[in-house]
Each structure stands twice: as C-alpha cells, then as structure tokens.
Length: 187
Image (tube, rainbow, N blue to C red):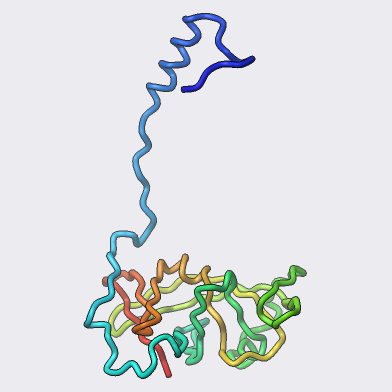
C-alpha cells in the first residue's frame, strides 16, 4: 500500500483500520467465460488434402443466417464489424423495416472514402459441424453498396462464438454443445 501526501492518516489507529480493511478483502473467485472449457487445437488431422499456395485463399464459410444458408461468407479477423449487404438481405427475404437506423460512418471498406450504413440489424447466425451446431444473435451493419461476398463476419463474430481461425488450413473452430465445431472453407 502507498500512503502519504495530503491524504496521509493522522494516527496509527487509522492506518491500522485501513490495513485491516485491505487485508480482509476476499480474493475474487475466477469467473470463466461461457464455452471456455473446450480446448481448441489444430494438428495434422486438420490438414487439407492439398494446399496449393498457403495463405493465398481467404477463409470463406457457409453459415445459416436467419434460416438461410449463405455460401459466400468471408471471415475477416481484421474487421471490427459484421457487414451485411442490403442486396443479400433482400435475397434472404428479410424485411427492411427491421433495420435500425444509425448515422455513424465507418472507414476501410471503400478505399479512401468513408462509407455510410443504412443501419443495423440483429440476425441469428448458426455455425455447424456434421453433428454439432450453435446459434448466436449477431448485430450486422447494413450497407447499400455491392460486395463480392454475401456478408463479412468480423471480430464480433469471433468474440461471440469464441471462434479460432487457421488461415493455413483454412479452418475455423469454435466450442459447441457437443464439443469443438470444425468448419472448413467453401471454395
């Protein structure tokens, strides 16, 4: 403990009482995040049959978003946003009235320019393996420009699902109710 200056205790008794108060504080029991009991590792069993040029291809997955399976979803660990294109929403049959308006621009999507979003929407996202799946609700920034992919999932996805990517093997792993869910890229 550091004492001194204008807040120094004026008597030994006050110092003793303060010391007792500090030393009687209980250590907090660690609280672990949900799904943290699953160890996620990558080994030779994750190695694809062939890797023509490691690191060249993006990690593209096919989750189920709002009851629709999307086949071209880019996993972008460098993005701080989950981005949904309005044309994808329209193709999915999601009502545009569900979009909450926001006026905050963001940068880094259109090179050299700020982009304005139409708003935000919350949609359920299901990631699945052969016999194991998990669903979480994510917030997407809805944009009105065209993109190569159906949607882009960024760090909010990784955090919510506790997902770990491996760009060498082009695999994504996350804990699920039946163990670790492993998702390979969809070419």
